[in-house]
Length: 124
Image (cartoon, rainbow, N blue to C red; front, side, top):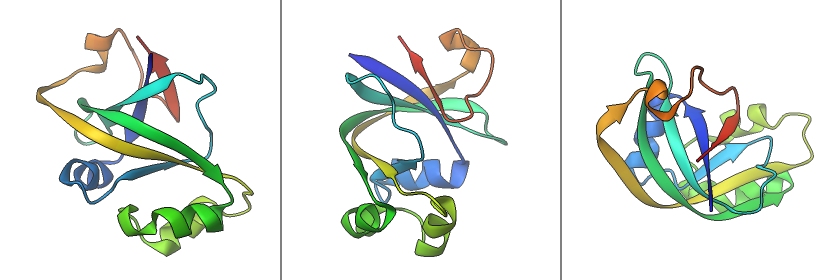
């Protein structure tokens, strides 16, 4: 199986870790078919790898349909969602499952990575 490392703003990381946000939205879908885990890098000011989360499903559809199917656990408001997908025909939503929060957050260098990904990167 395969993991992706994703950079997420701390306020959304908190929503994910609390269980209120069960979908992570992206404009680009991972091309590999066997992606089953998402490793979360909390951006500034935290700048640490804080958790690993099971990916239950990857949804891909129009922004309107994705919102209808995920809005209850989106962790964001409709205005922000609409701005994010403005002029886009396709939306991607990673449905998040079991969360493993690290007791001690990790540095990117602990994973052999020297930069925070703009969207995501594959890791072993």
